[in-house]
Image (cartoon, rainbow, N blue to C red; front, side, top):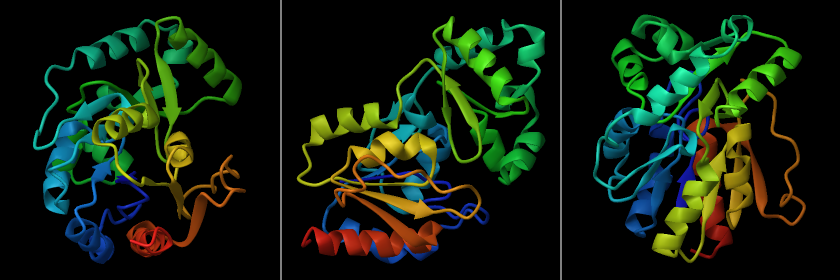
Length: 253
């Protein structure tokens, strides 16, 4: 079973293309391997993409692990958690609140500008159920105060490749453990490029860090010395494609 981040990993950081990964995706499908998309994207975004990739038979981890999208579904129901995250955010002192610009603070056109998404995709990115991504514009000490104030409301934060995402907990590895407990795969492979992927990478039999020139490389990980973490030289879906083929060879599959 393969758990993969999307932006900067399976999907190119700039162009949002994933076609270069088609050979490896076809191999996984032909061998009936599980393919679990794990992203900061919403259920609305992933539901459409999952169908195009051909992974509808498997669950997807949405909004950085704050939610889980069942196989074949396109939505996760009501957005009560998202509304509560926004309420907690808006209750913060103004001097801290103004330093975080979330998706709920701007128009679809502005989300498109922040992300590089097409306008119709930006609208799907705002259809949130569990978490609020946004851009931080303050100092590191202000950020510490911001996170401490949110923690009083039970809200935690995860740093992705582009955005700081706020939620009431649960992350990609929490959902990964839930899924592996259900499906009991013989082997697990995880791929990612950002800090919010680290726990998922370290909990797989083989973790693959996809090179992403758009941001600094991840630090040396706990299981890297034991050979369970691989780093690619190629970025995005090109690196993803090569890494999956190499991992399958390594597992003699």
